[in-house]
Length: 120
Image (cartoon, rainbow, N blue to C red; front, side, top):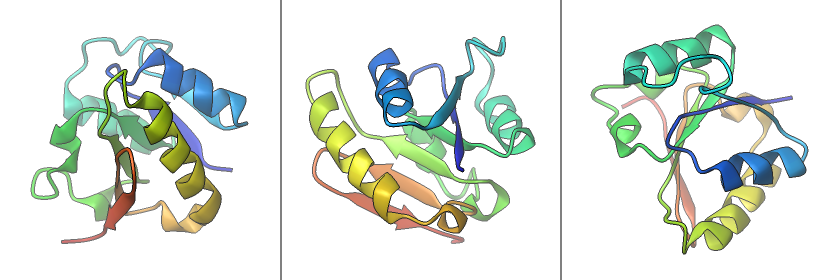
């Protein structure tokens, strides 16, 4: 089963949503990485063999963070107002994407779709 590491900027409601859907989610706060720099968070996700889930669009820069070097990254483009819509798209994505398709892939999820990006 896919494991997730939720970045500090990930809404608590998203963590709760994922857990209610049955996913294994750890937050950076729970493991003492509050305030950690982006590379440290991503390296911890890799160490944990977890997909990073975040609202930080910096992780969507494939020149800085090559998708092929990680277990996977999901960038959520959302606000509190759009969280229900984004969660619905995320639910659909998680049901359709096979476990082995996360590795080396960047997913960008918004209120009506998701897109993927692999090695640039």
